[in-house]
Figure (cartoon, rainbow over the protein chains, first blue to last red):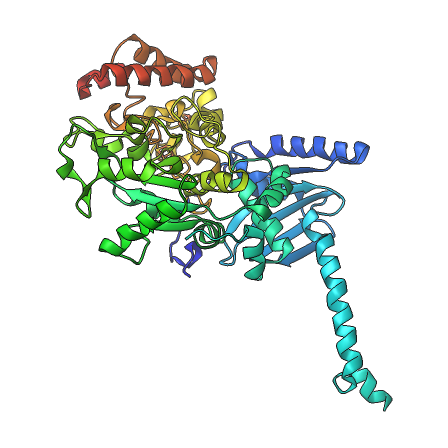
Length: 152
Length: 365
Ligand code: SF4
Ligand code: SF4
């Protein structure tokens, strides 16, 4: 499917300082409060950046202020979700895209590990059954098991 | 037709993992303008949700609202249309035509009696108007609406035409157009106004009904507060310039280039309640004010008759209008009050239905 990025347009901006609308710093303050709650009481927070009245440049400024930390991950489920820890440990950015690569949500999660990266408990139960089935089929068909083959 | 399968079952059958489902719920929370912490509650409710049947009626409209809806993001909208809701009747999107299409509508009404949603876009000639202005399959719009809503759980009026009469109802209203809420008195009516409405707002309202089976809290114009609770002006990123009294005077002056407030170019943001400032348009790319264009007030009743688009809050003449212009000029002194005041004036203007000449407007500037 064609996306906006495919439309060949060139934006001509007058030479000017990047615009500042001053909406990044208040969010940073909100994140500061959330991080204090996580550090002191273990309370997690999610902030939906889609609900913020950002002007051009505000999101880029916030992201620049947050920077990039040590951890980055991608979850491929219903399209890619890029997740990275900011330079402030415990503050994560989650950039959700659909299968066409278009953003569907942008959130800040203040937590030890983002919820999205934890294996869902129900999935672990399903995995246990799948692993058991894999073991049973490996035992029943040693030919399909390269380790078993080398033992012969 | 609506199936008895729950959404959770249906998504898993389509190979959607639990993480994918969590993501769907995060996007849905954002779409419903709910805090992200609601995602688990949404997940729980959606897991058990059943696909509601939706009958979409298009009357005196331009198809812009449907265009808007189909520009909503995937996967949300495609899931909504194909997995989550059962869109049983929609002129533009359905394959069936003629008698077969009308039959589909009647069948959906019988099979889902008392439970289906009716979505309407477009206004319709009122009961005393000539029905010949707008008919479908030989049935007048009025007759079709009244017959279809009989077994409906609720009616969603999508777009300013369905919600408030819109362009067809604008002076001199040649077709005797009325809105859905003018006619439907015994069923809940949710107005999702806008010309067209923000696509995510349309899907957000449908998602709320689907998720919680409840109708959203509404404002005085029957619009969901979650999306229409704050004015464009209150959420506008140019607001700091308004507060400092910095206004673009023309579309290409230094102020316009620097992104100053568009109030003096006719911005109706202070009297307009809609979600554009945060949800934006074209998949969150931008929105009219970000593109340097003043808000026209398209989600408000009778905005077509509220004066010219490029004149500073072009409510009709009189002291309140003058006051408002002053308010804009001094900015911070009145701030939010200007929005409330202008909304009130707009209401009075509509009631009085005053006409405004270009000269009178010039005088107010
Ligand atoms: S008048 Fe319009 S451009 Fe100015 S701050 Fe209000 S909504 Fe934004
Ligand atoms: S900015 Fe104003 S006129 Fe434009 S779509 Fe939003 S509410 Fe309508």
